[in-house]
Image (spheres, rainbow, N blue to C red):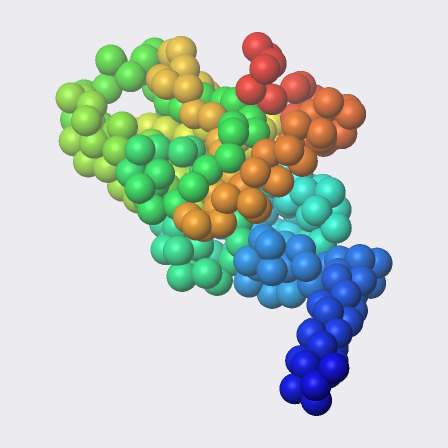
Length: 272
């Protein structure tokens, strides 16, 4: 055996041992790092998911400043299933897609609809709950449906599908935008706007919790299912989140979270 051959074999052996060492490090205590690379996470070991924090009871701040709600609980459960530490963050709803594209977080778990325009910018999981857009008016209003509006001032949250819909209605003279649905509903209760459009579940929750002097008017305007948004080019994370969502539904965890916050099943499969 020549010296050159011996050196070559020694070098090959060292490379093989190094590769073996790296492989063993990816199991056990090193598995999290492997997952970080596979999922392309914003921060190692954490699942950073965003929401507005202004969409009670889906996501909101409690009096002590703690972030709570259905979306928060679901995001934490997803992190658990992916063996990651949950890291919920907040921002204005109309800025969330831009923040995701800028890689400031991994997901948007914030009651967002997967519109065609948003799909051009980010990817989406399957739907994770089903609700619908609802018109709300003052309790003493003569309006019984969207068709009864005339020269109306309607409140919606900026950047939502509700804003786009309201602008197309012939009876709407002005669409006033707010940073949160709770703010829009409060303005309606105070008589500063004629109507508001938001998710039916959210509006009914607000009426029950605060006694605000408003009511739903007419039938559901259009279905408003929510999906989880992820960065384009990160298909592994999107697929794993979809898989985790299915597990959460199948093992009864979803039903427990749904009952906790709404008293009914709000999954896409439910007719509640």
